Image (tube, rainbow, N blue to C red; front, side, top):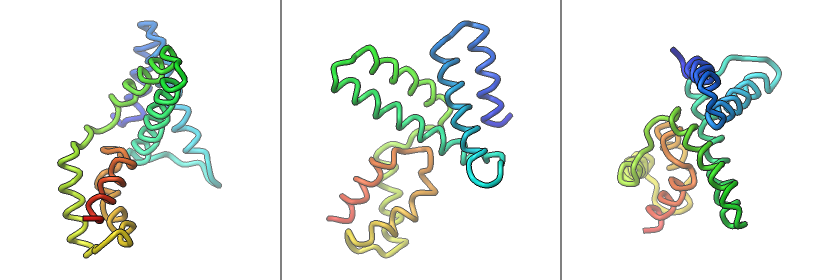
Length: 150
């Protein structure tokens, strides 16, 4: 069973159990996937990796919204966004630890021959396919920058 089918099945179960947070979040995810499928000139079916990319993007939106609501003193809205983020996280691959990311960065630096901050694009290009959906891009970017500035 693919990820999209799992989402549809879980949506049915969430509706059956009247879980409004889960059902609302999964509906939002499925809408984002459908929007991605019909964007562009031709409608297409997303691959599992593309669905994970959509999920990662939606999770990032929830994280950022929760932070902004918290800054604005709206703890209730921040909690709602965090709850949605937790639902999305169930469908993402296990996240990499900071040590695992640093190890991948070191391998990418040696493989690309990167020597300084000017080579950040090379390193990010080499590491991005390996971390897709498994780590936050901003975190990886800051770790790459720190490694290249040594």
